[in-house]
Length: 147
Ligand code: DQA
Image 1 (cartoon, rainbow, N blue to C red):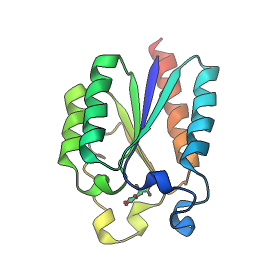
Image 2: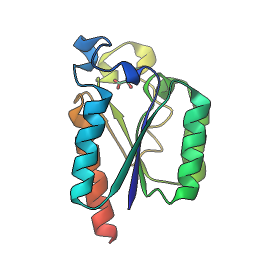
Image 3: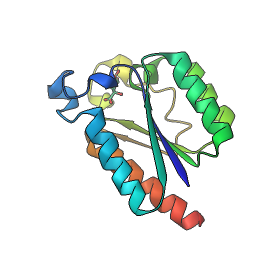
């Protein structure tokens, strides 16, 4: 089985970027923790970060032909703007969980709306880097029950 983890713009700066909001954990830390957990279940986990909307769309489209079973995505700022990434996810029809480090509902009003949440299997926000691990546990249990 294969899981793809997608990270949108500025998440390459995690650990340095507004640590009071996003924490001190880096993207490399998050990837390492997720990869080792997935390995226990014999699942291949790949991560991809981009600051470019089109690259994220291309990666989602590629997932559709690569046999990716599940996507975990933090679209970052594109959460609130991108019909294109939303349409790509609908187009490939791969189930996904949406993750945000911060509680977007407790922040500026423009962060309260997501173009992804109504298409997501579920949404985790406000739990920091741990949110990714929890999303992964969910994805792994779903893949196990699918057999
Ligand atoms: C974010 C929340 C977004 O509003 C913001 O633009 C981000 C990160 C989060 O993980 O909390 O870049 O998705």
